Amino acid sequence: MQGGIPICFPQFGNCGSLEQHGFARNKIWTIDDNPPPLHTNDSKGKAYIDLLLKPSEEDLKCWPHWTACGLLSSRWSHPVLSPALTMHADIDLRSCLHVWWSVLYLLCQNSDVLLTDHVLFSFEFRLRVSLSSDGDLTIISRIRNINGKPFNFSFAYHTYLSISDISEVRIEGLETLDYLDNLYQRERFTEQDDAVTFESEVDRVYLSSPNVIAVLDHERKRTFVIRKDGLPDVVVWNPWEKKSKTMVDFGDEEYKQMLCVDGAVIERPIPLRPGEEWTGRVELSVVPSSYCSEPLDSQHRGL
Ligand SMILES: O=P(O)(O)OC[C@H]1O[C@@H](O)[C@H](O)[C@@H](O)[C@@H]1O
Image (cartoon, rainbow, N blue to C red; front, side, top):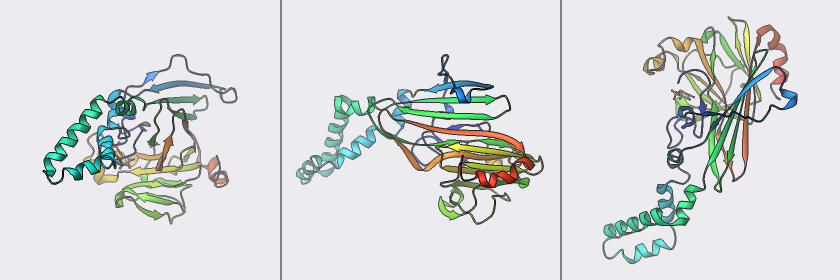
């Protein structure tokens, strides 16, 4: 979907064996009818909803942390197995390999120990979306390892901002940072400009960014203020003209009125041990540009 705030989890982009941006954005989530209350300091004038995602067996099978492939290849180099392979090498290497693959396959099918690897790996994802009476949108993701096996994940709130005109917009808060450029095989560069502006396709991951980023829309004289926590990286994406024409679910001219600026965790995926929970929070507010341009400089370094 090209719009809104798709959740990229447990993979960002195509850096892994899952579908682009992971499976979470393509799933049916359930509504928690009895969600925990908002924190008392944070509840004034807010409406909220909690959505839950629990993985299906299929999701876990696709996620490479436990896959039969992974198990087979790690056991293949096991010291106990390798000598056996050498022993049979003088007979016929190909049939020997075949025998061992069959044995390992049967082990995967029948052994409690191997199956335990897969059965024990699972998570629960709670997404809280809250809207305050003055229009601030807060989204909090809580991902919990609910079983006995650790896993890693990447994450992004793929936030499509609606803007007047892409050539009228600038992002402040990313100056001097390093970024990985997806248009150059994720090569690392350093931002040299005072602000990020747009004259062609941009597809970058800014690394270790401050917790407050501002997107200034000069024509509309308004600024999106993005406050984030637990999300060190920032994705900046606009497909521009040529790529827009190749995207089936995106109008040829729509790149002019959109800009993705995502709070994300990409460079260093989050390791989650059994019982641990990770929280990633983003708050979006829209303020008149005159109100925000002065104080933002001092806000850039903190939340
Ligand atoms: O079309 P999708 O899967 O929603 O992805 C849109 C874009 O998302 C961006 O975050 C990626 O960096 C781009 O490479 C990608 O094209």
